[in-house]
Image 1 (cartoon, rainbow, N blue to C red):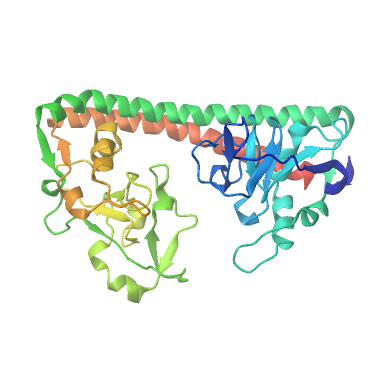
Image 2 (image 1 turned 60 degrees about the vertical axis):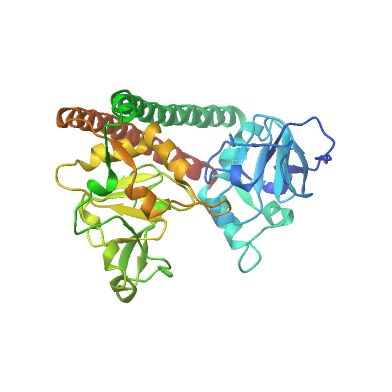
Length: 381
């Protein structure tokens, strides 16, 4: 294994095209990168888009795009389609396939060592950036001979298995939604519904939270943001904490175990249930708190709100264009299909069983990701 410099093994491709006069169909912007992912699968349609003149850099299948802005977001990955990107996304190719396989570059870009280097060499005060020459100074260890190809194949085997686990989680979610739709649809179509306002506890009406929770306050009150429950579970790793003084002004939105949270600003329709450890926490203005009467199981209501039936109701109630949102009055009048207790219990048990399956998949996925990260950092770090 030898040490190599970025500039000696990776080059920047500058193939320029006119976005207004090209047969290419797709473009990749900053919003299409998934932070920390080795693959870029999202893209925008070029025709009819409003992208600016900076989008003129051509990329080809197999190229690796490296975002030069905000290195803390870890935006870099390989594309498997033709398109264009802006000049702040560097199109990267190997100088010699026998020394550095192109397929290995995205994994090198997603190591702790690479992003630590990028952070240390960034410029700017608010919108951080790196020039190409800044990246060129990075040095890393590189396997040789048969080991080089073995490591490349091994890392892609990890990636394929990882994608498989992720697809299983999506399939499980789809199964739950289809089961809820099957049982909810007859009641929704017949008008046998109960309004959200009639499902909530009398002393805890539907409300939103703190308008401006401020910067992180050490030892303060946790505040759940929409970004904290992107997958239906509230994650506390990077949770914001507000001051007790500000929290005291928003006691109306204090959380209790079993409260159902619904995202109502920006991203509409995400749902989560408050666990015991977050009792006493608060929420932002972009989340609505739904505190249910004892007769309603939070898991049943979560499944109902996540179902395509209710998601469609929400989208029809969305207000605004640039900054979309849901009105609390509309939420209170949402019609929930009024299943008998035995039907609700069946769906709750079904949800619980699939949640167990998802938990097992997530645990396997977490173990896989830790193993892959350890290998990448040990080899290239």
